[in-house]
View (cartoon, rainbow, N blue to C red):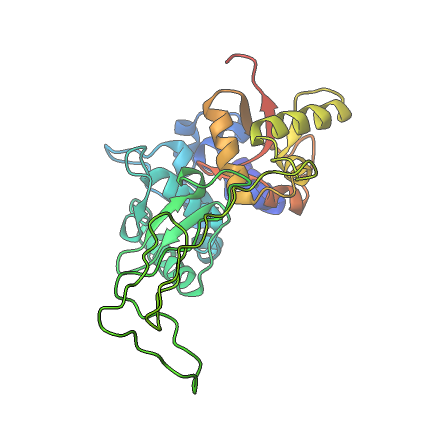
Length: 316
């Protein structure tokens, strides 16, 4: 059966190629998703192939959210990053991008749903998630895509430590050090201008310390880093020029060109550029270039597709 042969070949490619979505398998076989789904209902196909979701009935899942897998691979697929990302993509909405754990297995075949839920619970216990995802643990864990989170811009200063709450104990004096109680009625100095004024411990009046002089940047101070968009534009232009000017650059090469930008920040900033219609992302079909492991790791999983190429748009 040709369809099974295509599925086996996709498994050998590995990575984002397997398991393919019903939509992708239809593309590879040259048929429509409806024709491909019907072909999977034959006795030979049913004996060896599973669909992650049912395709019959009134509520037909979109072919782009239904995975086609060999029956022997059910446990491996249940534990895969691919299924978790695909289920989150299917369940999330623009108004509710965070999804409860109980919602993630919905729509899956019963056997796959049970194995998938158990795999997620192990992930939470081991604090192990794909790089594209985050989770809030607790009684009802929530999962979300890092790209949906609001993150600080690259190079943003760290948040200062929060002041101690009112009534919190102050640092105690070293053991054995003399302790002096302030006489009743002795004046205590309060910080009114943001400067720190020590309290009077011996009853004597201490004048307020002069305000610190404002910090002035010296000529040799390090310049502020350029905005991400400008650096990304420059890196893309240079890499594309070196590759022959085909307007196709791998995410792996772009990440390597901006090594100081954390992955989560890089993804969030790139998502903003995509919303501005400045860049688009594409998957690899495996026909013209066999992706290396590092190139696959640098990709971004969306709707069951591993996006590994960046192209500049000119229709904004």
